[in-house]
Image (cartoon, rainbow, N blue to C red; front, side, top):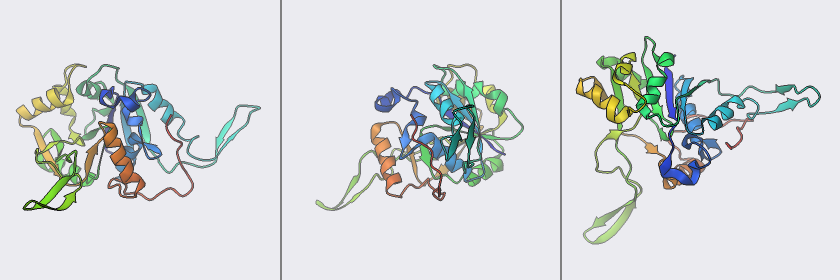
Length: 269
């Protein structure tokens, strides 16, 4: 089974409206944390072995998953004995490893600290705990296996912050909502690595983007998987509201699963 590492330990300083109280991956989109949405998406491709790199307010993430079974359905609590019994099994059959990677550790350092869990004979996926997309993960892995290099980066074209105006001469003909920008391709996460990645990460201060990936690229070992579909990070309150709007209107491109019938996870604290 392909292992999935989720970077969920950053401070989220550009999103202080929410991250003063919780880590950014635990900010809700609808009734679920964005981290849950990401993991749910991976599970639709049969990837359910998760390694979550925690740091800032990591206890909130640990508490959420430690209590997931009891907050996902009907529960009996025997106040005489303290016994707790759950009456239903959550539809998620995930294995969630919560790895403490330090408060000030950079993204590359967090991956490096998970080496003993991820350093196997097969490739693993690393992504961020604040971005949603509809990347074809099977096609991504197939592409990675086809080129034989050390790493694959999913390249995306970011949406523009504002909608565009379409003209006919000076006459406004229509508006385009959040078109792809003309800024070119960027790193969209959803990275596939061979275990040799750890040779390129030297310390906690290493950024995965500015140290690890640049070193790998300099050695000719980094390939790009171009994704033309939906991709959106959640850096600001504006981004959160946009993702929530898509979710509430039933237009979320990353939602490729059916709704639960009787189970519902409580809102994250």
